[in-house]
Image (tube, rainbow, N blue to C red; front, side, top):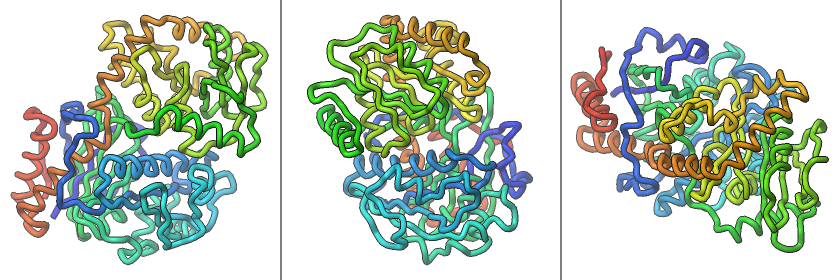
Length: 494
């Protein structure tokens, strides 16, 4: 039996455990080689039950009031999307829920869930709840005890070592998935299943190669860990969404139930939601320079006291919000009249999914640790358009750069963004490029192609026989089937 993990080299990847360093094998693998057909991957008939694992990292990389939101969102969205594509499969979301707080700045899993999915009650541990058609189970974990050894090591690894999450806590499945994996997370992910796949936060760049970490496993499943991003398995694209009328009704109902005033008649939603106020201010000022539609616009923005709305036309109603349930955020991104302003992995994927051929694309604020993925997307679109990538600079705002701008700098950015959005011909070309790439960027479809190969291999040889020379031959053939004949390992370790 063997375990496979794919990840990417990066100078500051201090999250990678020294446990793996001596087992590194370099392989040049281009995930773009996976041929993907949106939503049409026939998942193996032997897969009847799928577990999706989630949880919020507690102080792994230092305190942050935003820590964990993306981790919960990734797996919440993934489990719903998987169930909508494969309604005959039983899909569970398993949430490791901390019952104590590591740092006052860091929200707990329960607090994040209450914002993103208010219909769930994370205080009910070990009880099956429903999120749409997905079963959800919260498992309590003492994170303080888990982090006593080393707070910089992935909490999953520490949980396993301290036996805080046991196989008896995890319902049996045919396939375990995690769409926000951390080094060491495979220790929980491989429990009570035959095949487990984890997806690392994306660091995809065309100039980097992938690392293959095989090591002997003492648990019940092999694990394949992959990276996401434009040059790897893609983004969390969602194609099974409510229609426009349903989405508008959801936005209206949520607004009214939370004391937000929206027009009684028809209106056009718009979303500008990012981690910092500067990108939103730039977006607001650019919006004021655009030709306004006949219907009134309702603009939902992340609430910051620094924001100034005085330049907006009277036809625009502004609704500041502290947070939004995932379903409302998704509806706003999907129905935005102009290109929405988003940040974070899941909002980014949903914005890419909502691109329309008539010229709606997206504006993305990228924090430092996601810059390579943003640049990678920009490079590919520029390649399609046969233009210099700098032409697309207004589409991608960098948090580090924004933090240095004064009022003059913000105004200059707003003017450039308005010119960019007003260029209808360019917007149509960008949207067509994104639409054409949605197939290869569909992370769920790509992941299930990999799962099918792993499942078929186990079905043919059996778990006990996938070792030694057979595992080497199987790995080589699977890599070449999935990523092309040019993908070869320099060296392999049993």
